[in-house]
Image 1 (cartoon, helix red, strand yellow):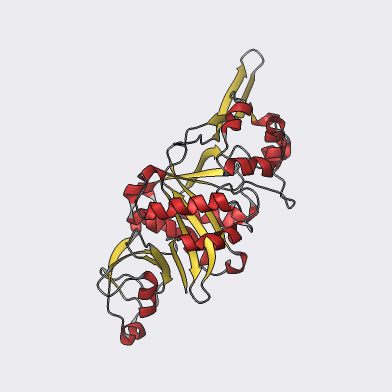
Image 2: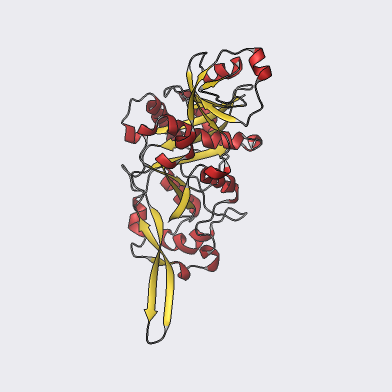
Length: 348
Protein backbone atom coordinates (compact mmCIF):
# COMPACT_ATOMS: atom_id res chain seq x y z
CA UNK A 1 0.00 0.00 0.00
CA UNK A 2 1.12 3.55 -0.71
CA UNK A 3 0.72 6.06 2.11
CA UNK A 4 1.41 9.78 1.85
CA UNK A 5 2.52 11.05 5.26
CA UNK A 6 4.22 13.94 7.01
CA UNK A 7 7.99 13.74 6.54
CA UNK A 8 10.14 12.63 9.48
CA UNK A 9 13.79 13.19 10.34
CA UNK A 10 14.76 9.62 9.41
CA UNK A 11 13.57 10.26 5.82
CA UNK A 12 16.52 12.57 5.08
CA UNK A 13 18.76 9.99 3.38
CA UNK A 14 15.91 8.79 1.17
CA UNK A 15 15.04 12.39 0.33
CA UNK A 16 18.63 13.09 -0.70
CA UNK A 17 18.66 10.02 -2.94
CA UNK A 18 15.46 11.19 -4.56
CA UNK A 19 16.84 14.72 -5.07
CA UNK A 20 19.75 13.29 -7.09
CA UNK A 21 17.20 12.06 -9.67
CA UNK A 22 15.38 15.36 -10.14
CA UNK A 23 17.69 17.19 -12.54
CA UNK A 24 17.88 20.94 -13.09
CA UNK A 25 15.01 23.40 -12.90
CA UNK A 26 13.50 22.48 -9.52
CA UNK A 27 15.12 24.89 -7.07
CA UNK A 28 13.27 23.54 -4.02
CA UNK A 29 14.68 20.01 -4.28
CA UNK A 30 18.44 19.99 -4.81
CA UNK A 31 20.86 17.19 -3.77
CA UNK A 32 22.44 19.31 -1.03
CA UNK A 33 22.46 17.46 2.30
CA UNK A 34 22.76 20.64 4.38
CA UNK A 35 19.90 22.36 2.58
CA UNK A 36 17.68 19.28 2.68
CA UNK A 37 18.53 18.65 6.33
CA UNK A 38 17.53 22.19 7.25
CA UNK A 39 14.33 21.84 5.28
CA UNK A 40 13.37 18.54 6.93
CA UNK A 41 14.01 20.14 10.32
CA UNK A 42 11.70 23.03 9.42
CA UNK A 43 9.07 20.62 8.09
CA UNK A 44 9.06 18.58 11.31
CA UNK A 45 8.75 21.80 13.33
CA UNK A 46 5.92 22.87 11.04
CA UNK A 47 3.83 19.78 11.71
CA UNK A 48 4.66 20.08 15.42
CA UNK A 49 3.57 23.76 15.34
CA UNK A 50 6.74 24.92 17.08
CA UNK A 51 7.57 27.68 14.57
CA UNK A 52 5.60 30.69 13.38
CA UNK A 53 2.83 29.81 10.87
CA UNK A 54 4.27 31.99 8.07
CA UNK A 55 7.65 30.19 8.29
CA UNK A 56 6.23 26.70 7.94
CA UNK A 57 7.10 24.30 5.14
CA UNK A 58 4.93 21.18 5.14
CA UNK A 59 6.74 18.33 3.38
CA UNK A 60 5.13 14.97 2.60
CA UNK A 61 6.60 11.69 1.42
CA UNK A 62 4.90 8.82 -0.34
CA UNK A 63 5.93 5.55 1.31
CA UNK A 64 5.53 2.06 -0.13
CA UNK A 65 4.65 0.17 3.05
CA UNK A 66 5.50 -3.22 1.51
CA UNK A 67 9.21 -2.49 1.08
CA UNK A 68 9.34 0.68 3.24
CA UNK A 69 10.69 2.67 0.31
CA UNK A 70 10.12 6.40 -0.20
CA UNK A 71 8.57 6.70 -3.66
CA UNK A 72 7.79 10.41 -3.87
CA UNK A 73 7.84 13.80 -2.20
CA UNK A 74 5.77 17.00 -2.31
CA UNK A 75 5.36 20.10 -0.17
CA UNK A 76 3.42 23.25 0.67
CA UNK A 77 5.16 26.42 1.83
CA UNK A 78 2.96 28.55 4.06
CA UNK A 79 4.24 31.82 2.56
CA UNK A 80 6.97 32.86 0.12
CA UNK A 81 9.07 35.98 -0.10
CA UNK A 82 8.74 37.16 3.52
CA UNK A 83 12.40 36.59 4.41
CA UNK A 84 14.03 36.67 0.98
CA UNK A 85 12.84 38.24 -2.30
CA UNK A 86 10.46 36.22 -4.46
CA UNK A 87 10.75 37.22 -8.12
CA UNK A 88 8.67 36.48 -11.19
CA UNK A 89 8.12 38.05 -14.57
CA UNK A 90 4.64 39.46 -15.06
CA UNK A 91 3.60 39.41 -18.70
CA UNK A 92 2.08 42.74 -19.67
CA UNK A 93 1.12 44.64 -22.80
CA UNK A 94 2.31 47.97 -24.14
CA UNK A 95 0.48 49.63 -27.01
CA UNK A 96 2.26 51.80 -29.58
CA UNK A 97 0.18 53.71 -32.10
CA UNK A 98 0.52 56.46 -34.68
CA UNK A 99 -2.65 57.97 -36.09
CA UNK A 100 -0.66 59.68 -38.85
CA UNK A 101 0.99 56.46 -40.03
CA UNK A 102 -2.06 54.33 -39.22
CA UNK A 103 0.10 51.97 -37.16
CA UNK A 104 -1.22 50.23 -34.06
CA UNK A 105 0.87 47.55 -32.32
CA UNK A 106 0.45 45.55 -29.14
CA UNK A 107 3.75 44.40 -27.64
CA UNK A 108 4.10 41.74 -24.93
CA UNK A 109 6.45 42.78 -22.13
CA UNK A 110 8.13 41.15 -19.16
CA UNK A 111 8.08 43.08 -15.87
CA UNK A 112 10.32 41.96 -12.98
CA UNK A 113 7.81 41.57 -10.19
CA UNK A 114 7.38 40.74 -6.50
CA UNK A 115 3.59 40.61 -6.86
CA UNK A 116 3.23 37.06 -5.48
CA UNK A 117 5.10 37.76 -2.24
CA UNK A 118 3.26 36.29 0.74
CA UNK A 119 1.38 33.63 -1.23
CA UNK A 120 1.33 30.00 -0.10
CA UNK A 121 3.12 27.71 -2.54
CA UNK A 122 2.71 24.14 -3.76
CA UNK A 123 6.20 22.88 -4.56
CA UNK A 124 8.77 20.06 -4.64
CA UNK A 125 6.58 17.47 -6.39
CA UNK A 126 8.65 14.49 -7.53
CA UNK A 127 7.66 10.86 -8.08
CA UNK A 128 10.29 8.15 -8.55
CA UNK A 129 10.30 6.97 -12.19
CA UNK A 130 9.39 3.35 -11.40
CA UNK A 131 6.26 4.51 -9.53
CA UNK A 132 4.91 6.63 -12.38
CA UNK A 133 1.94 4.44 -13.13
CA UNK A 134 -1.72 4.08 -12.28
CA UNK A 135 -3.02 6.74 -9.90
CA UNK A 136 0.25 7.23 -8.01
CA UNK A 137 0.95 10.67 -9.47
CA UNK A 138 -2.56 11.87 -8.70
CA UNK A 139 -2.31 10.60 -5.13
CA UNK A 140 0.98 12.40 -4.53
CA UNK A 141 -0.11 15.70 -6.07
CA UNK A 142 -3.64 15.86 -4.73
CA UNK A 143 -2.80 14.90 -1.15
CA UNK A 144 -1.75 18.52 -0.62
CA UNK A 145 -5.21 19.80 -1.47
CA UNK A 146 -6.83 17.51 1.09
CA UNK A 147 -4.35 18.80 3.68
CA UNK A 148 -5.21 22.40 2.75
CA UNK A 149 -8.91 21.57 3.00
CA UNK A 150 -8.44 20.16 6.49
CA UNK A 151 -6.27 23.04 7.70
CA UNK A 152 -7.16 26.10 5.57
CA UNK A 153 -6.28 28.50 8.40
CA UNK A 154 -2.61 27.61 7.97
CA UNK A 155 -2.40 29.18 4.51
CA UNK A 156 -2.97 32.50 2.80
CA UNK A 157 -5.93 33.02 0.49
CA UNK A 158 -3.73 32.83 -2.63
CA UNK A 159 -2.06 29.52 -3.53
CA UNK A 160 0.61 29.40 -6.25
CA UNK A 161 2.69 26.73 -7.96
CA UNK A 162 5.79 27.48 -10.03
CA UNK A 163 5.95 25.01 -12.89
CA UNK A 164 9.28 23.80 -14.26
CA UNK A 165 9.94 25.56 -17.57
CA UNK A 166 10.65 24.04 -20.95
CA UNK A 167 14.06 22.48 -21.63
CA UNK A 168 15.20 20.65 -24.73
CA UNK A 169 16.44 17.05 -24.76
CA UNK A 170 19.92 18.25 -23.75
CA UNK A 171 18.63 20.06 -20.67
CA UNK A 172 19.07 23.47 -22.31
CA UNK A 173 16.61 26.27 -21.49
CA UNK A 174 15.91 28.38 -24.62
CA UNK A 175 14.52 31.21 -22.51
CA UNK A 176 17.57 31.39 -20.27
CA UNK A 177 19.91 31.26 -23.23
CA UNK A 178 17.95 34.03 -24.95
CA UNK A 179 17.72 36.35 -21.95
CA UNK A 180 19.21 35.37 -18.60
CA UNK A 181 22.66 34.44 -19.83
CA UNK A 182 23.18 38.00 -21.12
CA UNK A 183 22.83 39.37 -17.59
CA UNK A 184 24.11 36.59 -15.30
CA UNK A 185 27.09 35.40 -17.37
CA UNK A 186 26.90 31.88 -15.94
CA UNK A 187 25.37 28.49 -16.70
CA UNK A 188 21.67 27.85 -16.03
CA UNK A 189 22.46 25.12 -13.49
CA UNK A 190 24.75 27.48 -11.56
CA UNK A 191 22.07 30.16 -11.33
CA UNK A 192 19.53 27.51 -10.36
CA UNK A 193 21.83 26.25 -7.59
CA UNK A 194 22.32 29.75 -6.15
CA UNK A 195 18.59 30.40 -5.88
CA UNK A 196 18.07 26.96 -4.33
CA UNK A 197 20.19 27.91 -1.32
CA UNK A 198 18.53 31.30 -0.94
CA UNK A 199 21.15 33.47 -2.60
CA UNK A 200 18.90 35.77 -4.61
CA UNK A 201 20.36 39.24 -4.14
CA UNK A 202 22.16 38.92 -7.49
CA UNK A 203 18.79 38.90 -9.25
CA UNK A 204 17.99 42.45 -8.20
CA UNK A 205 21.60 43.48 -8.78
CA UNK A 206 21.89 42.12 -12.33
CA UNK A 207 18.42 42.01 -13.86
CA UNK A 208 17.03 45.17 -15.52
CA UNK A 209 14.08 46.78 -13.76
CA UNK A 210 12.56 48.26 -16.89
CA UNK A 211 10.10 46.22 -18.99
CA UNK A 212 11.62 43.85 -21.55
CA UNK A 213 9.95 43.40 -24.94
CA UNK A 214 9.28 39.72 -25.64
CA UNK A 215 9.64 40.40 -29.38
CA UNK A 216 13.30 41.29 -28.84
CA UNK A 217 14.06 37.74 -27.67
CA UNK A 218 15.15 34.97 -30.06
CA UNK A 219 12.18 33.15 -31.60
CA UNK A 220 12.89 29.93 -29.69
CA UNK A 221 12.88 31.87 -26.40
CA UNK A 222 9.60 33.59 -27.28
CA UNK A 223 7.98 30.25 -28.07
CA UNK A 224 8.59 28.73 -24.61
CA UNK A 225 7.28 31.59 -22.44
CA UNK A 226 4.66 30.00 -20.19
CA UNK A 227 5.46 26.46 -21.41
CA UNK A 228 6.31 23.60 -19.03
CA UNK A 229 9.01 20.95 -19.09
CA UNK A 230 7.74 17.83 -20.88
CA UNK A 231 7.89 15.81 -17.65
CA UNK A 232 5.81 18.51 -15.91
CA UNK A 233 2.83 18.41 -18.29
CA UNK A 234 0.89 15.83 -16.20
CA UNK A 235 1.56 17.80 -12.99
CA UNK A 236 0.21 20.97 -14.55
CA UNK A 237 -2.92 19.17 -15.72
CA UNK A 238 -3.59 17.82 -12.23
CA UNK A 239 -3.25 21.25 -10.63
CA UNK A 240 -5.60 22.78 -13.17
CA UNK A 241 -8.18 20.09 -12.37
CA UNK A 242 -8.05 21.20 -8.74
CA UNK A 243 -8.72 24.87 -9.45
CA UNK A 244 -5.31 26.34 -10.29
CA UNK A 245 -4.85 28.46 -13.41
CA UNK A 246 -2.27 30.50 -15.31
CA UNK A 247 -2.55 34.29 -14.98
CA UNK A 248 0.48 35.58 -16.85
CA UNK A 249 3.33 35.16 -14.35
CA UNK A 250 6.41 33.13 -15.30
CA UNK A 251 9.72 32.11 -13.76
CA UNK A 252 12.53 34.57 -14.42
CA UNK A 253 15.03 31.90 -15.45
CA UNK A 254 13.18 29.34 -17.58
CA UNK A 255 9.81 31.14 -18.11
CA UNK A 256 7.84 28.24 -16.65
CA UNK A 257 4.25 29.28 -15.83
CA UNK A 258 3.12 30.14 -12.31
CA UNK A 259 -0.33 28.70 -11.59
CA UNK A 260 -2.57 30.49 -9.11
CA UNK A 261 -5.76 29.74 -7.24
CA UNK A 262 -7.81 31.04 -4.33
CA UNK A 263 -7.87 28.56 -1.46
CA UNK A 264 -11.62 29.00 -1.02
CA UNK A 265 -12.18 28.02 -4.67
CA UNK A 266 -10.07 24.85 -4.71
CA UNK A 267 -12.03 21.68 -5.46
CA UNK A 268 -10.92 20.00 -2.23
CA UNK A 269 -12.08 22.92 -0.12
CA UNK A 270 -15.45 23.00 -1.89
CA UNK A 271 -16.14 19.29 -2.26
CA UNK A 272 -14.27 17.25 0.38
CA UNK A 273 -16.37 15.89 3.22
CA UNK A 274 -15.78 14.51 6.69
CA UNK A 275 -16.89 10.95 7.43
CA UNK A 276 -16.91 8.68 10.46
CA UNK A 277 -15.06 5.35 10.14
CA UNK A 278 -17.44 2.39 10.46
CA UNK A 279 -16.46 -0.99 11.95
CA UNK A 280 -14.67 -3.17 9.41
CA UNK A 281 -16.54 -6.34 8.51
CA UNK A 282 -15.98 -8.73 5.62
CA UNK A 283 -19.73 -8.69 4.99
CA UNK A 284 -19.70 -4.90 4.59
CA UNK A 285 -16.92 -5.10 2.01
CA UNK A 286 -18.66 -7.88 0.13
CA UNK A 287 -21.83 -5.80 -0.17
CA UNK A 288 -20.17 -2.45 -0.84
CA UNK A 289 -21.00 -0.98 -4.27
CA UNK A 290 -18.18 -0.37 -6.72
CA UNK A 291 -17.09 3.24 -6.45
CA UNK A 292 -14.50 5.53 -7.96
CA UNK A 293 -11.16 5.90 -6.13
CA UNK A 294 -11.34 8.19 -3.12
CA UNK A 295 -8.66 10.17 -1.33
CA UNK A 296 -8.92 9.58 2.41
CA UNK A 297 -6.88 11.33 5.09
CA UNK A 298 -6.84 11.45 8.84
CA UNK A 299 -7.36 14.80 10.54
CA UNK A 300 -4.17 14.82 12.62
CA UNK A 301 -1.82 17.71 11.79
CA UNK A 302 1.19 16.22 13.58
CA UNK A 303 0.83 12.81 11.94
CA UNK A 304 -1.05 13.59 8.72
CA UNK A 305 -1.51 10.50 6.57
CA UNK A 306 -3.46 9.86 3.39
CA UNK A 307 -4.30 6.88 1.20
CA UNK A 308 -6.27 6.05 -1.92
CA UNK A 309 -9.27 3.81 -1.21
CA UNK A 310 -12.09 2.17 -3.12
CA UNK A 311 -14.42 3.00 -0.22
CA UNK A 312 -16.78 5.96 -0.53
CA UNK A 313 -18.32 8.22 2.08
CA UNK A 314 -22.07 7.56 2.33
CA UNK A 315 -24.33 9.56 4.63
CA UNK A 316 -21.38 10.76 6.67
CA UNK A 317 -19.85 7.31 7.14
CA UNK A 318 -17.11 5.34 5.40
CA UNK A 319 -16.13 1.67 5.56
CA UNK A 320 -12.35 1.34 5.63
CA UNK A 321 -10.59 -2.01 5.85
CA UNK A 322 -8.45 -2.82 8.87
CA UNK A 323 -5.34 -2.34 6.72
CA UNK A 324 -6.53 1.09 5.59
CA UNK A 325 -7.32 2.13 9.14
CA UNK A 326 -3.85 1.07 10.22
CA UNK A 327 -2.29 3.01 7.37
CA UNK A 328 -4.15 6.15 8.45
CA UNK A 329 -3.56 5.42 12.14
CA UNK A 330 -7.24 5.76 12.84
CA UNK A 331 -9.87 3.47 14.29
CA UNK A 332 -13.61 2.89 14.26
CA UNK A 333 -15.45 6.05 15.25
CA UNK A 334 -12.66 8.41 14.17
CA UNK A 335 -13.30 11.16 11.65
CA UNK A 336 -11.51 11.21 8.29
CA UNK A 337 -11.67 13.59 5.32
CA UNK A 338 -12.58 12.27 1.87
CA UNK A 339 -12.55 13.52 -1.71
CA UNK A 340 -13.06 11.75 -5.02
CA UNK A 341 -9.72 11.33 -6.77
CA UNK A 342 -10.97 12.66 -10.09
CA UNK A 343 -12.75 15.96 -10.57
CA UNK A 344 -16.18 15.63 -12.12
CA UNK A 345 -16.50 17.44 -15.43
CA UNK A 346 -18.77 20.13 -14.07
CA UNK A 347 -16.18 20.88 -11.35
CA UNK A 348 -13.11 21.24 -13.59
